[in-house]
Image 1 (cartoon, one colour):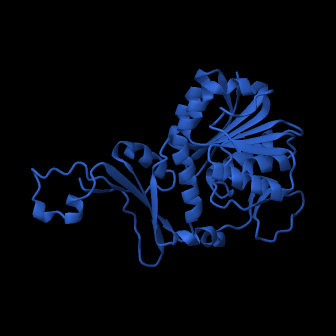
Image 2 (tube, rainbow, N blue to C red; image 1 turned 180 degrees about the vertical axis):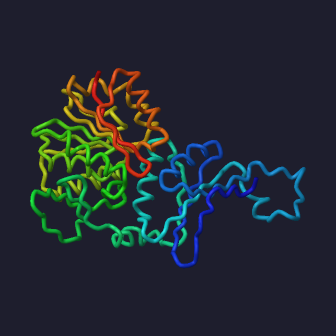
Length: 318
Protein backbone atom coordinates (compact mmCIF):
# COMPACT_ATOMS: atom_id res chain seq x y z
CA UNK A 1 0.00 0.00 0.00
CA UNK A 2 1.13 3.56 -0.63
CA UNK A 3 4.88 3.62 -1.21
CA UNK A 4 5.92 0.06 -1.93
CA UNK A 5 9.61 0.43 -1.15
CA UNK A 6 11.33 -2.73 -2.33
CA UNK A 7 14.67 -1.10 -2.40
CA UNK A 8 15.87 -0.02 0.49
CA UNK A 9 19.55 -0.95 0.51
CA UNK A 10 21.98 1.10 2.60
CA UNK A 11 22.25 4.57 1.11
CA UNK A 12 24.66 6.03 3.63
CA UNK A 13 25.92 9.55 3.79
CA UNK A 14 29.45 8.82 2.61
CA UNK A 15 28.50 7.80 -0.94
CA UNK A 16 26.70 10.18 -3.27
CA UNK A 17 23.70 8.60 -4.97
CA UNK A 18 21.67 9.56 -8.01
CA UNK A 19 18.00 8.60 -8.19
CA UNK A 20 16.58 7.62 -11.57
CA UNK A 21 12.78 7.71 -11.36
CA UNK A 22 10.60 6.48 -14.22
CA UNK A 23 6.84 6.97 -14.37
CA UNK A 24 4.41 5.02 -16.58
CA UNK A 25 0.73 4.18 -16.79
CA UNK A 26 -0.35 1.86 -13.98
CA UNK A 27 -0.98 -1.09 -16.29
CA UNK A 28 2.64 -0.89 -17.48
CA UNK A 29 4.13 -1.15 -13.98
CA UNK A 30 5.12 -4.83 -14.19
CA UNK A 31 6.94 -4.31 -17.48
CA UNK A 32 8.71 -1.22 -16.11
CA UNK A 33 9.75 -3.07 -12.94
CA UNK A 34 11.31 -5.87 -15.01
CA UNK A 35 13.34 -3.40 -17.08
CA UNK A 36 14.45 -1.31 -14.10
CA UNK A 37 15.68 -4.48 -12.39
CA UNK A 38 18.23 -4.78 -15.21
CA UNK A 39 19.90 -1.65 -13.85
CA UNK A 40 19.61 -2.49 -10.13
CA UNK A 41 17.96 -5.10 -7.97
CA UNK A 42 17.14 -2.40 -5.40
CA UNK A 43 13.89 -0.80 -6.52
CA UNK A 44 11.59 1.77 -4.98
CA UNK A 45 8.08 1.33 -6.36
CA UNK A 46 5.40 4.02 -5.95
CA UNK A 47 1.90 2.72 -6.60
CA UNK A 48 -0.96 4.53 -4.87
CA UNK A 49 -3.77 2.77 -6.69
CA UNK A 50 -4.57 0.42 -3.79
CA UNK A 51 -5.20 3.08 -1.14
CA UNK A 52 -8.62 2.35 0.34
CA UNK A 53 -9.97 5.42 2.15
CA UNK A 54 -12.78 3.33 3.59
CA UNK A 55 -10.30 1.47 5.78
CA UNK A 56 -7.76 4.26 6.31
CA UNK A 57 -7.91 7.33 8.47
CA UNK A 58 -7.51 10.11 5.94
CA UNK A 59 -5.94 12.53 8.38
CA UNK A 60 -3.06 10.08 8.90
CA UNK A 61 -2.20 9.98 5.21
CA UNK A 62 -0.09 12.68 3.63
CA UNK A 63 -2.20 14.98 1.47
CA UNK A 64 0.11 14.55 -1.50
CA UNK A 65 -0.58 10.80 -1.40
CA UNK A 66 -4.31 11.32 -1.10
CA UNK A 67 -4.22 13.57 -4.15
CA UNK A 68 -1.75 11.45 -6.14
CA UNK A 69 -2.73 10.29 -9.62
CA UNK A 70 -3.89 6.69 -9.14
CA UNK A 71 -3.57 5.93 -12.88
CA UNK A 72 0.23 6.09 -12.91
CA UNK A 73 3.08 4.42 -11.04
CA UNK A 74 6.81 5.05 -10.66
CA UNK A 75 9.91 2.94 -10.16
CA UNK A 76 13.21 4.36 -8.89
CA UNK A 77 16.74 3.03 -8.73
CA UNK A 78 19.63 4.65 -6.86
CA UNK A 79 23.06 4.68 -8.44
CA UNK A 80 26.33 5.26 -6.57
CA UNK A 81 28.74 7.84 -7.92
CA UNK A 82 30.87 5.23 -9.71
CA UNK A 83 27.93 4.18 -11.92
CA UNK A 84 27.37 6.05 -15.18
CA UNK A 85 23.97 7.72 -14.97
CA UNK A 86 23.82 8.68 -18.69
CA UNK A 87 24.68 5.14 -19.80
CA UNK A 88 22.00 3.69 -17.54
CA UNK A 89 19.47 6.18 -18.89
CA UNK A 90 20.47 5.40 -22.47
CA UNK A 91 20.09 1.69 -21.68
CA UNK A 92 16.61 2.30 -20.24
CA UNK A 93 15.52 4.44 -23.17
CA UNK A 94 16.56 1.74 -25.62
CA UNK A 95 14.65 -0.93 -23.67
CA UNK A 96 11.59 1.33 -23.39
CA UNK A 97 11.54 1.78 -27.16
CA UNK A 98 11.89 -1.95 -27.74
CA UNK A 99 9.11 -2.88 -25.31
CA UNK A 100 6.61 -0.17 -26.17
CA UNK A 101 7.09 2.06 -23.11
CA UNK A 102 7.52 5.09 -25.34
CA UNK A 103 5.62 7.38 -22.94
CA UNK A 104 7.84 6.57 -19.95
CA UNK A 105 8.88 9.74 -18.12
CA UNK A 106 12.47 9.72 -16.82
CA UNK A 107 13.59 12.02 -14.00
CA UNK A 108 16.87 12.27 -12.10
CA UNK A 109 17.73 13.67 -8.71
CA UNK A 110 21.36 14.44 -7.98
CA UNK A 111 22.56 15.24 -11.50
CA UNK A 112 21.45 17.96 -13.91
CA UNK A 113 20.16 16.84 -17.29
CA UNK A 114 22.35 19.36 -19.09
CA UNK A 115 25.41 17.77 -17.46
CA UNK A 116 24.65 14.22 -18.65
CA UNK A 117 26.71 14.48 -21.80
CA UNK A 118 29.89 15.25 -19.86
CA UNK A 119 29.49 14.12 -16.23
CA UNK A 120 29.73 10.41 -17.07
CA UNK A 121 32.98 10.73 -19.00
CA UNK A 122 34.95 10.59 -15.75
CA UNK A 123 33.82 6.98 -15.33
CA UNK A 124 34.39 5.84 -18.91
CA UNK A 125 37.99 4.64 -19.35
CA UNK A 126 39.71 2.23 -21.79
CA UNK A 127 38.56 -1.32 -21.19
CA UNK A 128 39.98 -4.51 -22.68
CA UNK A 129 37.42 -7.16 -23.51
CA UNK A 130 38.41 -10.68 -24.47
CA UNK A 131 41.90 -11.21 -25.87
CA UNK A 132 42.29 -8.41 -28.39
CA UNK A 133 39.63 -5.70 -28.38
CA UNK A 134 40.14 -2.53 -26.35
CA UNK A 135 37.24 -0.07 -26.19
CA UNK A 136 38.65 3.44 -25.82
CA UNK A 137 36.70 6.69 -25.27
CA UNK A 138 37.15 9.04 -28.21
CA UNK A 139 38.65 11.70 -25.91
CA UNK A 140 41.24 9.37 -24.30
CA UNK A 141 44.78 8.67 -25.52
CA UNK A 142 45.69 4.99 -25.81
CA UNK A 143 48.54 3.13 -27.50
CA UNK A 144 47.72 -0.40 -28.67
CA UNK A 145 49.90 -3.16 -27.21
CA UNK A 146 50.93 -6.40 -28.94
CA UNK A 147 48.00 -7.59 -31.09
CA UNK A 148 45.33 -5.35 -29.55
CA UNK A 149 42.59 -3.90 -31.75
CA UNK A 150 41.46 -0.44 -30.61
CA UNK A 151 37.84 0.60 -31.00
CA UNK A 152 37.25 4.28 -30.26
CA UNK A 153 33.74 5.21 -29.18
CA UNK A 154 31.77 8.31 -28.25
CA UNK A 155 28.38 6.80 -27.41
CA UNK A 156 26.66 10.08 -26.59
CA UNK A 157 23.21 9.08 -25.32
CA UNK A 158 23.13 5.76 -27.22
CA UNK A 159 23.67 2.52 -25.34
CA UNK A 160 26.99 0.79 -25.85
CA UNK A 161 30.28 1.79 -24.28
CA UNK A 162 31.59 -1.69 -23.59
CA UNK A 163 31.23 -1.30 -19.84
CA UNK A 164 27.89 -3.09 -19.53
CA UNK A 165 27.93 -6.85 -19.04
CA UNK A 166 25.64 -7.48 -22.01
CA UNK A 167 27.98 -5.69 -24.41
CA UNK A 168 31.04 -7.42 -22.97
CA UNK A 169 29.42 -10.82 -23.46
CA UNK A 170 28.73 -10.21 -27.14
CA UNK A 171 32.21 -8.82 -27.78
CA UNK A 172 33.77 -11.92 -26.21
CA UNK A 173 31.63 -14.05 -28.52
CA UNK A 174 32.46 -11.85 -31.50
CA UNK A 175 36.16 -12.57 -31.03
CA UNK A 176 35.43 -16.27 -31.40
CA UNK A 177 32.82 -16.30 -34.15
CA UNK A 178 33.83 -13.44 -36.47
CA UNK A 179 35.53 -14.90 -39.55
CA UNK A 180 37.49 -12.95 -42.14
CA UNK A 181 35.21 -11.44 -44.76
CA UNK A 182 31.97 -12.62 -43.12
CA UNK A 183 28.68 -10.79 -43.65
CA UNK A 184 27.45 -9.39 -40.33
CA UNK A 185 24.06 -8.07 -39.12
CA UNK A 186 23.66 -6.07 -35.89
CA UNK A 187 20.05 -5.77 -34.65
CA UNK A 188 19.53 -2.98 -32.10
CA UNK A 189 22.96 -1.47 -32.68
CA UNK A 190 22.85 1.37 -30.13
CA UNK A 191 26.17 3.18 -30.44
CA UNK A 192 27.32 0.89 -33.26
CA UNK A 193 29.93 -0.72 -31.05
CA UNK A 194 29.30 -4.33 -32.10
CA UNK A 195 29.38 -3.66 -35.83
CA UNK A 196 32.59 -1.66 -35.40
CA UNK A 197 34.14 -4.45 -33.31
CA UNK A 198 33.17 -7.04 -35.93
CA UNK A 199 34.72 -4.92 -38.66
CA UNK A 200 37.92 -4.54 -36.66
CA UNK A 201 37.99 -8.33 -36.25
CA UNK A 202 37.89 -8.84 -40.01
CA UNK A 203 34.22 -8.96 -40.94
CA UNK A 204 33.41 -7.90 -44.50
CA UNK A 205 30.04 -6.26 -45.02
CA UNK A 206 28.39 -5.10 -41.77
CA UNK A 207 24.81 -3.87 -41.62
CA UNK A 208 23.53 -2.29 -38.40
CA UNK A 209 19.98 -1.29 -37.49
CA UNK A 210 18.19 0.39 -34.60
CA UNK A 211 14.61 1.54 -34.03
CA UNK A 212 15.83 4.77 -32.42
CA UNK A 213 16.88 7.49 -34.92
CA UNK A 214 19.10 9.08 -32.25
CA UNK A 215 21.02 5.82 -31.86
CA UNK A 216 21.40 5.56 -35.64
CA UNK A 217 22.78 9.09 -35.78
CA UNK A 218 25.28 8.37 -32.99
CA UNK A 219 26.27 5.04 -34.56
CA UNK A 220 26.87 6.65 -37.95
CA UNK A 221 29.06 9.30 -36.32
CA UNK A 222 31.11 6.58 -34.60
CA UNK A 223 31.36 4.61 -37.84
CA UNK A 224 32.55 7.71 -39.71
CA UNK A 225 35.09 8.56 -37.00
CA UNK A 226 36.38 4.98 -37.04
CA UNK A 227 37.32 5.30 -40.68
CA UNK A 228 35.56 2.03 -41.53
CA UNK A 229 33.83 1.99 -44.92
CA UNK A 230 32.22 -1.47 -44.74
CA UNK A 231 29.48 -0.61 -42.20
CA UNK A 232 26.06 0.84 -42.96
CA UNK A 233 23.57 1.84 -40.26
CA UNK A 234 19.87 2.58 -40.78
CA UNK A 235 16.58 2.73 -38.89
CA UNK A 236 14.64 -0.54 -38.61
CA UNK A 237 12.14 -2.08 -36.23
CA UNK A 238 14.13 -5.23 -35.50
CA UNK A 239 14.33 -7.12 -38.82
CA UNK A 240 11.44 -5.42 -40.64
CA UNK A 241 13.53 -3.03 -42.73
CA UNK A 242 16.80 -5.01 -42.65
CA UNK A 243 18.46 -5.98 -45.92
CA UNK A 244 17.62 -9.58 -46.80
CA UNK A 245 19.18 -9.82 -50.25
CA UNK A 246 21.29 -12.73 -49.00
CA UNK A 247 21.88 -14.50 -45.67
CA UNK A 248 24.32 -13.30 -43.02
CA UNK A 249 27.18 -15.34 -41.60
CA UNK A 250 26.94 -13.62 -38.22
CA UNK A 251 24.02 -11.90 -36.48
CA UNK A 252 24.19 -9.94 -33.21
CA UNK A 253 21.13 -9.12 -31.11
CA UNK A 254 22.06 -7.41 -27.84
CA UNK A 255 18.50 -6.56 -26.82
CA UNK A 256 16.33 -8.06 -24.04
CA UNK A 257 14.86 -11.53 -23.55
CA UNK A 258 11.30 -10.65 -24.58
CA UNK A 259 12.41 -8.97 -27.80
CA UNK A 260 14.75 -11.83 -28.72
CA UNK A 261 11.84 -14.23 -28.20
CA UNK A 262 9.65 -12.03 -30.39
CA UNK A 263 12.32 -11.87 -33.11
CA UNK A 264 13.18 -15.58 -33.18
CA UNK A 265 10.39 -16.75 -35.56
CA UNK A 266 11.51 -14.15 -38.13
CA UNK A 267 15.26 -14.67 -38.15
CA UNK A 268 15.55 -17.91 -40.20
CA UNK A 269 15.51 -16.20 -43.66
CA UNK A 270 18.53 -14.14 -42.59
CA UNK A 271 20.62 -17.23 -41.78
CA UNK A 272 22.19 -20.08 -43.77
CA UNK A 273 23.10 -23.48 -42.37
CA UNK A 274 26.41 -22.31 -40.84
CA UNK A 275 25.30 -18.88 -39.61
CA UNK A 276 25.83 -17.97 -35.96
CA UNK A 277 23.44 -15.76 -33.99
CA UNK A 278 24.86 -14.04 -30.91
CA UNK A 279 22.09 -13.09 -28.46
CA UNK A 280 22.61 -11.03 -25.32
CA UNK A 281 20.83 -8.56 -23.05
CA UNK A 282 19.32 -11.61 -21.37
CA UNK A 283 18.95 -11.44 -17.60
CA UNK A 284 19.97 -14.81 -16.14
CA UNK A 285 16.49 -15.57 -14.81
CA UNK A 286 15.11 -15.42 -18.35
CA UNK A 287 17.85 -17.44 -20.04
CA UNK A 288 15.86 -20.70 -20.04
CA UNK A 289 12.87 -18.95 -21.64
CA UNK A 290 15.07 -17.72 -24.48
CA UNK A 291 16.79 -21.09 -24.90
CA UNK A 292 13.45 -22.91 -25.02
CA UNK A 293 12.22 -20.49 -27.68
CA UNK A 294 15.30 -21.04 -29.83
CA UNK A 295 15.03 -24.82 -29.53
CA UNK A 296 11.31 -24.71 -30.33
CA UNK A 297 12.10 -22.94 -33.60
CA UNK A 298 14.83 -25.36 -34.67
CA UNK A 299 17.99 -23.82 -33.25
CA UNK A 300 20.68 -25.23 -30.97
CA UNK A 301 22.76 -23.46 -28.33
CA UNK A 302 26.44 -23.89 -29.16
CA UNK A 303 27.80 -21.68 -26.38
CA UNK A 304 26.52 -19.93 -23.27
CA UNK A 305 28.41 -17.24 -21.35
CA UNK A 306 27.42 -15.53 -18.09
CA UNK A 307 28.59 -12.32 -16.46
CA UNK A 308 27.21 -10.82 -13.27
CA UNK A 309 23.64 -12.03 -13.71
CA UNK A 310 23.51 -11.62 -17.49
CA UNK A 311 23.64 -14.27 -20.20
CA UNK A 312 24.97 -14.36 -23.78
CA UNK A 313 24.26 -17.15 -26.25
CA UNK A 314 25.77 -18.39 -29.50
CA UNK A 315 23.05 -20.08 -31.55
CA UNK A 316 22.97 -22.05 -34.82
CA UNK A 317 20.32 -23.88 -36.84
CA UNK A 318 19.84 -27.53 -35.89
